[in-house]
Length: 85
Image (cartoon, rainbow, N blue to C red; front, top):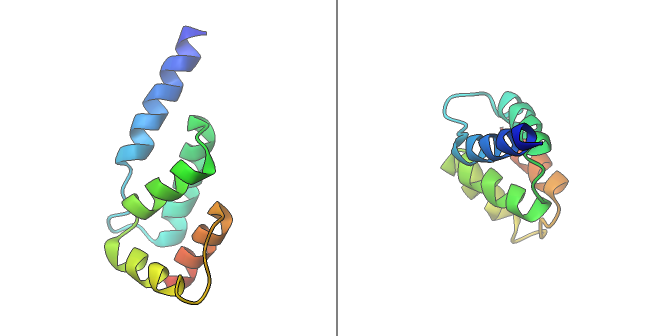
């Protein structure tokens, strides 16, 4: 039981420091989703981390879409970010 809690904490730390850098966005999203499932975090915090960890220029373009449509769900954010690239 203690081991599972430790793994969850480690995964949460890893996802908070996991950056896109030069990774292709599709590869980043796949790895990001795997970490999210392991860390068992909610969608709102996941969206926050996604915006924080994806390259700034991609987030700025995605946020530009907000003038047209409000992205509320995690799935919508992931699709919008992938479509930018």
